[in-house]
Length: 301
Ligand code: PMV
Image 1 (tube, rainbow, N blue to C red):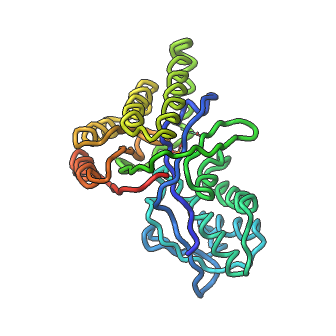
Image 2: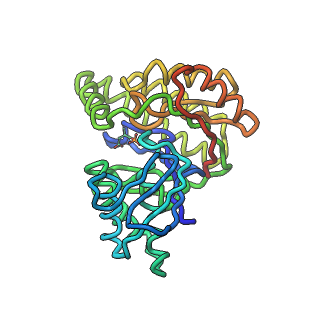
């Protein structure tokens, strides 16, 4: 089946908006797509979704934009989604990439990465207005990317010395990314040198984390992820539930834990050795009960 990878920010979110680099990673879980009989549209049991193109639904509109931009025959797409939707894990980009690949294959075509990126951008505009491009770039290429915003943004692959496992847990519905970004910008302005210093420190964490990933120093990476979480707390984007989940993960043996993405809710990630996967998942869900939404393990690299 055609596939699009899910995405996490490993380190560097928020400071990336202000010029620092960030590391974005593909998860081994994502969204798979196949073509089925029926009117052009999208169905996905995991997301409780069954829409047609042109029915006014955002997903129907996104599929229409994707189909037109790719120049392929409109068809019905069935998704097998391992990612929760709307949690900051790049689910809509993974959907666009998987659906684009499936639709093109049904016409006997193989789109280039650039064609797929253009089509995914058209689809992502329906959900995110002006998408940064990081989600669909990761969904297409997989792996781990050093990402710098700019016009255009740059994405450089990072060699992963030793593949690693993360537990991803959704602690609350995703917050509004635009509002979180605006809050961070206002704090940075208010705090002046201290505000800029916090963002520079996050940039330094990213550089060190990249080095740790290249040489396979997972203990070092875990420690840097935890430091990044505290810096994200200092810039005001963590929540008591995210803090509790990260603390529980570390207490259960995770090498490091942090919120991922915009914060204010959404997801946390914990770096684990394979043998601690389930212990960390259980600890995080226990710490969040009765409000835990979902936890799953995935591989990076
Ligand atoms: O939650 P996500 O995947 O949309 O991540 C947001 C990342 C930010 O750095 C907070 C914003 C951005 O556009 O880079």
